[in-house]
Image (cartoon, rainbow, N blue to C red; front, top):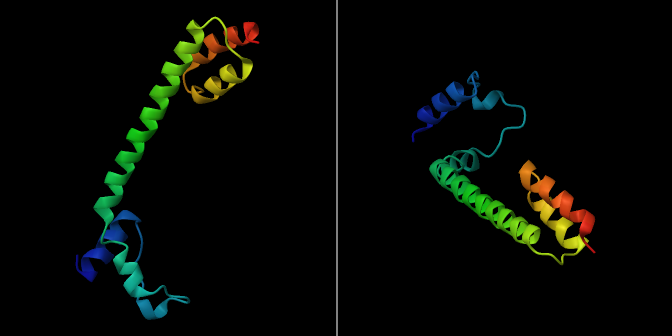
Amino acid sequence: MTDDEIISYLTKVFEAKAVPYWKLKHPPNYDEFKAGFANVGAEASGDMAEQQADRKKQLYWENRARELAATPNITKSEVLTAMAGVTLNAELTALLKEHLKRAK
């Protein structure tokens, strides 16, 4: 990307006004600022990998909660840990709350 393309992109995205570099009170290092746009596409793929990792963790805790619900001898700490892992799933949270009453 050329400098002009970067500036026009930023003004469109942030609905901003382009100010000359020399008018800035504490200007950033221009080379570092420009280097930040070199990997714009790489950040999007990093976000996708992070979302997949989060989904794996969520599935793990959902499966663990179902296992604990099926297990007769469970401890309170196991149930509380699983409840923290499935806070977004109201059904599993309610199921674990019921089993918390009979946990040791």
